[in-house]
Length: 299
Image (cartoon, rainbow, N blue to C red; front, side, top):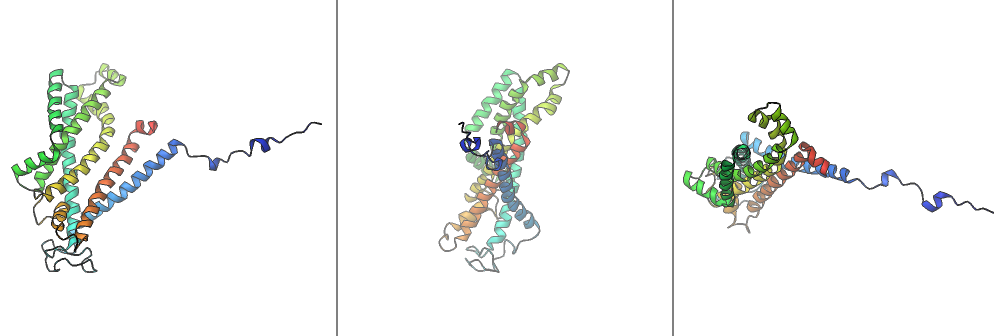
């Protein structure tokens, strides 16, 4: 007698599509969405605080009527410092200063760096070598030391900090722009565009910059985070924006002597500083994946 064994009893039931593991592409898409959302929330909170500080702060920055080292309360949400200034008002204005220095220095680094990188990529050999040598020297020079020299030369101010940090970061953007532009210019579609009679500057505007820009998003975001840290470092050393402007770096410097008595004066500026950097980096990483089709296909 022939015994028929059901196929299901040997091979098991058919796989459940819902229980199948997520594909690498699906996980990558989820990770990009999480980065974009978390980065947008963190950085958006800082932006909202900075914008609100333009129109309203709980107290004026020079108001010292709150008493020294008052603990957080409904009247003083973050407490007061050793001179009686409201800490929450200083945190709000410090967020505005951080964004101004960050965006201003990144704008300078982008304009100067991209221009130098494009010129080096399309120039003749000797000009390319000269620009590359200058970039190597600038990259090897410590960023904070260069910023300190420029601030010491022009005087401590917000404008000096923006110029110093922007020029210090331009060399890295210029080197990356030169390398990326050289690769793009070697592509076949560039040769075809040149054959059709497209001029060099029109070629850069139509083909080079759209292909180079996605590669620069994350480095410029890192420049933003580095600029915020550099401004805080300069303010900590007394070379940043002078009073009555509030800076997270100067708040940390002033709070180091009373950190055991009033820890919020040191903890809160540090939290906002870290949140700004992490938020901008995550936001830029997510935007890079959205803007660059090549990175999406690779992942």
